[in-house]
Image: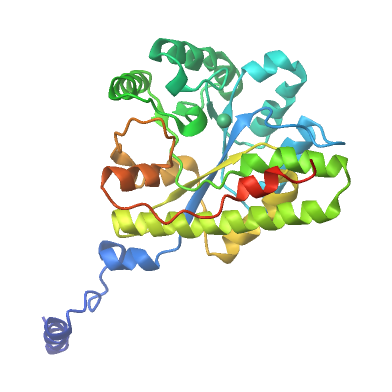
Length: 317
Ligand SMILES: [Zn+2]
């Protein structure tokens, strides 16, 4: 050790500097607070979600979402499939084809969008398995073993929760968790109504409300992450393949950019060690992963925020 190194050690002992010798910032817990926030976007309810706004087809919606994601240089984005919709409208198969042609993967959202909390574990397992032929067909030898629970309901009793967790493990599935959700699904019906009435003022209100909700959700997710983990974990955002995303997704992507978020894939996000521990809650309430963790760790919930969906639900009636 040279005299220079010795003197640096001495300084470090006095002021406890961890990086004096070029240490890895990632190995220092406090450094994570300054790391770039990361988020995996995910889309539920492929191939069809919500009412079709006048003048749009399901293919138009898929094309618009894919184009916006590609313009933002997004990594492969998971879309979660309810194959029953293909039986109801066979033409929507094009949506899955477009998603795959863009190089985006598909995952399981159950065949019929079944609510585990309102059905038996057996029925849920059959519904989940019924989605698999479609995933196999479109994904080939690529991995599609990710489940997004419909309504984020993971079982209303410990028995159901543990039974489905064991089933998923046996079948090689991982749960596509959600840390950021702002009810984007709630804007599609008012948007279709307001567009049909050509009510531009109400549509502007919808846009404003959506962006405020998204911004609030980012801030809350980051805050809950810090409360639970002492750092900002890699996030997963829940979105839906609905008509209003054709208007809002580019704006949402701009917002994420402004807030410094880097777009990552779902497997990258869930490589964060935070996801290795199941909150192991069973309840009637399908909260996000972070909300469940707050509850499991007895951390008081954040103060309630305005019910934005109630405000938009009354528009253009
Ligand atoms: Zn869904």
